[in-house]
Length: 450
Image (cartoon, rainbow, N blue to C red; front, side, top):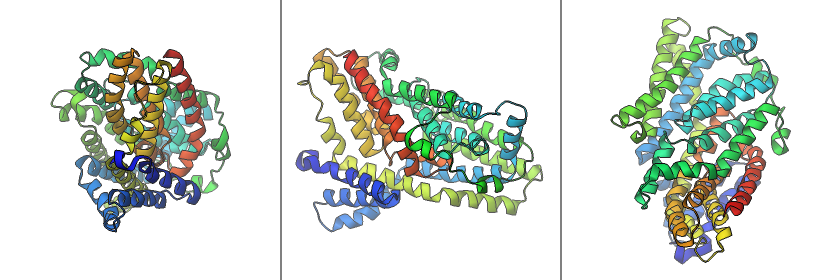
């Protein structure tokens, strides 16, 4: 398909991005991009219109996607319960009155540290950071856009730098299946060359430590309203928040071990985080009923209210995955990847691998899908040209994270927005200057090491 349509394969993601920027409405943008992609796949035939309906349906027939949607809804339930119980307010009150988190800097650093410490699963990292930090950011007058930036700049970047999680296992499987025998050592060797992930973490740490923000993020910084604090439930007991969240965090590695039949790195990330969230919801229900904090009727009301808040983001997630799948069928990634070849000067190979991976991830909204396309290309290019293998693979991984970081249809972008409680396009616009700065430095870095 890429060979026959060529540059036209770029049209759907460009339409989606243009509509998102112009209309500031991500759902309409995703539908417009999906329509363009399906019409191209159908050769302009009117049956492409029906494919726009069928594609999201197919998204939900995939077990991993269905688990992700269910997980998002259960997170809504959990958020509704711990917030209405007064547990979040009590947790924030305890942190601030005891002096543990009594300044904007400490609130930002706590978010950063949670994101770094919970490296086992990127979605878990994002949601744990969001749940723990929302009220703290509101209290200190820090915007939800800043929170989304700190969450997004830690969850995926830190996950790709660690071996012992789903990301590491996936990359090593790609290396092994593409002829790299010493996959573990090769993955370790790529870490110093994963420039974007390292720079994203450093920028996030700088922002958290100095509390300084720039560009669009600075303009959104003090848009917090008094309504946020007025609607905060009365503080009760911090355990109503802490116990369910700790249960969720600790259950993930246990579930990874269980679903991997005793091998943590072979476990299913989507199953593990869904099961962990379900366990956390059960613990929260028993805790709040046993503690007499909320009646069954009130728990049901607050649970459905929490789900309702996340329904728009769940819809964005479904459409984003549908558009990504449609674009992959169209061959957009393969077309972009065809730009990289052994005819380029050696000094430009790593930068071009990075740029190609970034464009694929940006247009398709998936870093893992980008890795699947670019790692098999980067390995033979490195072997044919003499470019060190860790640099070539590091460029592919780094570019995938950068493109995913800047894409409005990326699941990590949407999850970070969900976790912070902010609009997806607001998050994309405010994060973009930081991501572009780190991306440009990464290109320079790859040019220098090549």
